[in-house]
Structure formats: C-alpha cells, structure tokens
Image (cartoon, rainbow, N blue to C red; front, side, top):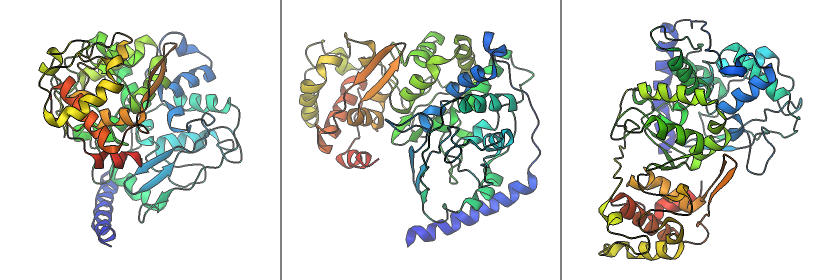
Length: 434
C-alpha cells in the first residue's frame, strides 16, 4: 500500500513536468549525420546497415542466450517490473516484416511502433533519435535481409501506473526531444563522428549515465557512471581520478577493440557484451573518433567515485605464489577461497601469466568498495570472443554460498585494490535472483 501511495506524487510530478515541457518544447533541427569512413561511405545499403546495426549492438538486446539472433525475448528487469525485447526479424506475424520505412523510422526517431503504441525507453530511441534517416533505413534494410523467425514477444509485466503505455506520451513530453544530430560547427569532423557514435548510435549514455526520478537519463551527470542490472558501468568522463582522464589513447583503443588494456583490467558483464558484439567491429578510425569525443566529456566524479590504486601494499608484498603476510583476520576465509579457486590463474600479485585478461591490478572493479562487478563476475563468470580468441572465466555461483562469495569478493578488493570491501551475503543473494 505504501508503495502505491508513493507512486501518486511521482506520477503527479511527472505530469506537471510534462505539461511544462510540452508547452515550452521547440521543433528539432533536421540535421545530417557525419559520413562513415572509407568504403562504408559508399557501400551498398545492406552492408552499411550491417555495420550500423553492429555499432548499435542491436543483437545484444534482441537475442536471448541460446536463441536465434534478433528474435527478441530478452528480459529487462526494472524497479517497476519486467520488459521483454521485441522480435526484429522480418517475420510478418511476430516480427517487423509488415513495417514500412516510415514505421521503422518513427520507432527509432520517436519511440512509436507500427501499431501506434508507444515504446518504453528500455529501447533507446532517446539516443537513436539522433540518427539520420538514411542510417536508420540502412539498418532496416539489413534486418530485412535476415531470415524471418516466428517468435511472439512476451507482454510486459509492469506495475501500475507503468503498465499504461499512453502515459509514455507524458514521459516523452517531460524527458524526450525528437531531433537529428547536427554537427557542431566549432568541432572537428573526427569529434563530430565520435559524438554521433557515442551519444547516438552506440548509445553509451544509456548504461554509463545515472537515471533521475522519472527513470530518464540524468544529463547533469552524463557518463559519470551508473548501475545496470547489478553491474557498475564506470565513469567514462575526463575526470583524471575517477574517470578515464589518465588513460592514454592507446589504452582506450585496446580496451574498446579488445576488451582489455594493460593496467586497467578487462571488460566483463554488459561491457564485455558490447566489445564482443559491437565495438571490436568498428572501423579503426571510428574507434579513434569515439576516443576523441570521450576526451572532451567534462570531468565529473559521479555519485559513487572510485579511485584506482594500481599498486596496493597487499599486492606489492605478495609474490606470484605467496600472499602478503598479515592479512586481516576477517578476510582469512576469503584468502583460503582465493587460494583454492583463483590463485592459479590470477596469482597472488595479480600477474596472471596465462592471459592478460586475468590481470587484476589497476582494474576499477577490484578498487570499488561496493564490489558490484567483482561479486557479479564470481557469480556469473565471464565469456566473450574477441579477435578470434575466447576469453573465459568460470562461474562460481553454484560452487560457493552467498557468504563465501561475499568473503571472496571482499578479499579480492583488499588484495588487489587495497580497500575494505562492503559485499554482504544479502547482496549476493539479491543478485542471484536477477
């Protein structure tokens, strides 16, 4: 009952903001998209569309594990219920096979689907609205070249009032503006292409920017980090302590294309998926342009700033085969778990001779006292295929209890980040349900 009462003032507030935004809104500028690089600029429409669909990582959200690509069904667990991604194969019964060009453009630009119903912004039309019509239609051409898959999309399971699609019109009035990307005249072509990629096509803000009370992106903290499905999407602003300000261009290039940069750790969770499905396939110049744009994002500390200690005393006092002496008593159980299950790959000093992807020193995950990503990767493991090789870490979710995963997580944060971890058994139990 209390939750229902709390929703009333939130709904009223959104309606009020919506009314103001509707009255003060302005029509979008038409805009044009920067050209793609090299041969892609003049490539056949389907080939361009394949590249753009990969850059947008469409397959990640529209494919369930073990399912057919683009057939939908992936659950999005939100604070107010669960949404399921739609079938975007050209199946005429359950997919988008009957959608016209204008239908498809309207969905990506305005968040309105073929039948006139409004889409929820779990589908990031709030970012895709920036794409040029030509790019949107190239993506459609590629999707329509794929085999149709008959698979019905599950209906959303949302609580009131969030299950009222008509209310998305109010949300859009408050938090959304349909507009195409217009290149900044005072910026270089490289910066503009990077901006088009980052804030439109690759929709980086959808994961790396926190949400406001209306669950819209809080642009005051653009790219300063956010929690996504229990994973911490890190700060990627120019902040030198909490963001990527101290990363070299070479570091960022390696991380975006290969999911790993020496001294910064490896990608995992949603970022690992983005590297595997999308970022590794970008034209190298597009990757460099993306870095150019990210360099310009104003420095912000974020709500939960993480400082990286690349050489903590605990790791410095260890060898590859022996841990540091005098580990605190409350971390001894975690030490024993690390010894039995982790030390052979990661080593006590974080050296990881078998693969650089296992190196832990300098990784933000092991420097974050909340331990979100450490806990998640112990629970679920990590798997991605990059540059023709498989990167794999097994899951220990079935092998360890909630208390053991908490103990191991806190030990890893101490040993390789030099910080006191805050992971509890209750936190682990909550993540098992997601």
